[in-house]
Amino acid sequence: MSLTMTLQTHTPVLIKESIQALQVQPGKRYIDCTIGSGGHAMAILQKSYPQGQLLGIDIDPQAIKIAAERLNNYSGATTLVNDSFANLENICTQYDFYPVHGILLDLGISSPQLDAAERGFSFQQDGPLDMRFNPNRGLTAADIINTLSENELAQLIRKYGEERHSQRIARAIVQNRPTATTLELAQLVKQPLRGRRRRIHPATRTFLALRIAVNHELDNLKAALSQAVKLLDFQARLVVISYHSLEDRIVKQFMKQETRDCICPPEIPVCHCGHVATLKLISKKVITPSHLEIASNPRSRSAKLRVAERIRPK
Ligand SMILES: C[S@@+](CC[C@H](N)C(=O)[O-])C[C@H]1O[C@@H](n2cnc3c(N)ncnc32)[C@H](O)[C@@H]1O
Image 1 (spheres, rainbow, N blue to C red):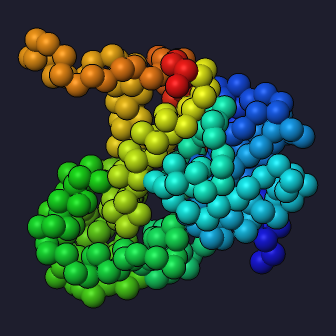
Image 2 (cartoon, rainbow, N blue to C red):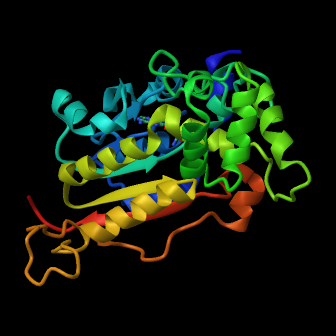
């Protein structure tokens, strides 16, 4: 399949809302921390070009290739970096990209990743149990399920998948290992849940848990958020789109905390933390896709967009 065919498969989510939230203006500097197929990046460039600059990051080398081809017409205004957004500050230092007028994180997985059986993200198609956003680095999902103890596995599935039946699932996995493929795992997860009514596919939560663990998604998100705030110029915007409750909770709590001057526990009478507010919330209510967007792109259905603005000149 050609790159051009592959890159057409990811439909950017909440595109109008995110560009509006970022307040993209000509001549300013933006970071897309999760460039994917470049859908959001393209919209940012269309509004900020020709003097504007975009730094696009993705941990997946294949995404960088797709984005480079897609954004070819804007190559003079675009810098693409294959790295984790957990290294945001270092990347900005290395490319002298500071201060920044808007930062976007569109978290999770892209359609090209989900739809490629060989990446191992999907329980609908058979492939190796990989699930690494960067297929050249780190442990695979197979490494994890074939080596953790039953208890460790149960904890992981409960913590990251919020799966009530994690213990039964972990037992089934451990009793049948080694497991090498996505369909084998999906089949194993189904067995202990037989007869239980669920709105979602029985493997959904277990696959999500493994993906989060393989890619250290929650730790990377926390690291990126605290670095992003330091890079934002006065009145610049931080926009985050998340797709599951654990991510959204981190974003919500982070933004809330950054609106406060003191974050000492309430029982401490005098402030010890010295924390000063850095953000104000632009929309207290989370922004979600319209019915129309969900109908035309069902993968957008769980998206939640939060936006905050840098309040203090540094
Ligand atoms: C939902 S997609 C982004 C889609 C993109 N906004 C577009 O319009 O095509 C999420 C992307 O984030 C990337 N990603 C996930 N974790 C990352 C990390 N720690 N650092 C950088 N990129 C990451 C994934 O590889 C994936 O390409």
